[in-house]
Amino acid sequence: MIHAEVARDVADLTTRGVVPGLTVVLVGDDAASATYVSGKEKASRSAGMSGATIRLPATTSQAALLAVVEQLNADSTVHGILVQMPLPSQIDPDTVIRHIHPRKDVDGFHPINVGKLLIGHTDGFVSCTPAGVIELLVRSGVQTRGAEAVIIGRSNIVGKPMAALLMQGRSHADATVTVCHSRTRDLSAHTRRADILIVAAGRAEMITGDMIKPGAVVIDVGMNRVPDATRAQGTRLCGDVHFASAVKVASRITPVPGGVGPMTIAMLLKNTVRAAERSLH
Ligand code: GUN
Image 1: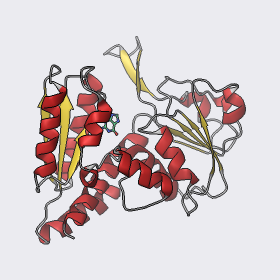
Image 2 (image 1 turned 135 degrees about the vertical axis):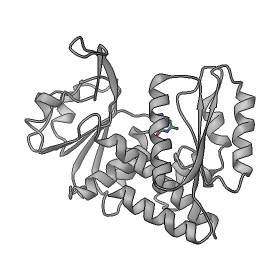
Image 3 (image 1 turned 30 degrees about the vertical axis):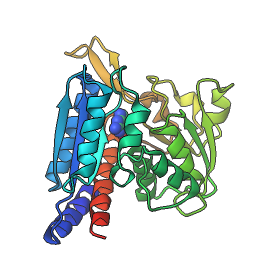
């Protein structure tokens, strides 16, 4: 549904002379990153966007990557730049993020965009996964206003921007937000209070049904590959929520794969369309 909306916006911009362009930069050969990047590539192409993936070797220096980013900043056909994380250890991710022009930062990782999100300015870019979670809640008719929202995980990519979004004083937000993390005492005491439980901790199946309030809405942001001898390839993908027990307690729950992941990509495309639109003014 969102993809159709994005494709329509892309077609509209194209007739106005601007083809939204997204360039993804992938450094190294991390298998999970390669999978995510090819998903982003396919989605942007099928929406009618222009774009490319720049693949650089794992030995790329920070200076070489910054030079690529600067070239993309200066290229008027590139509206969105995404440098896939994680980066190899010789490269400091924060330095790279600060080099991406904030108006092309469709990941919403630049400090300018993070700051705008926190203070409630809506002219910046919001990190795609948290934006996708809000979109899922809105499109499913879940009331966030006044709800107890509990977030597990405090990453810059998901947990922190998720909290910032949900605490804003506007519709589709206005929740009472709790952020839990690895040092939280008595995690279950928090999760059992949640009307909306958002799990982005990166620990396979850590949230079980007994930790969930009956009727809660559960959003699983986890994406973990775990051993599974019953599968041909010897592994399977799972979330941070133990689906089989949680599904019996929750009123709604997102599956892994197929829940939040596609929404993240949809938000990336939406951000790129916005970046292209803004280039017209
Ligand atoms: N790695 C995992 N998620 C993301 C994301 O949303 N953006 C980027 N750039 N890297 C990621």
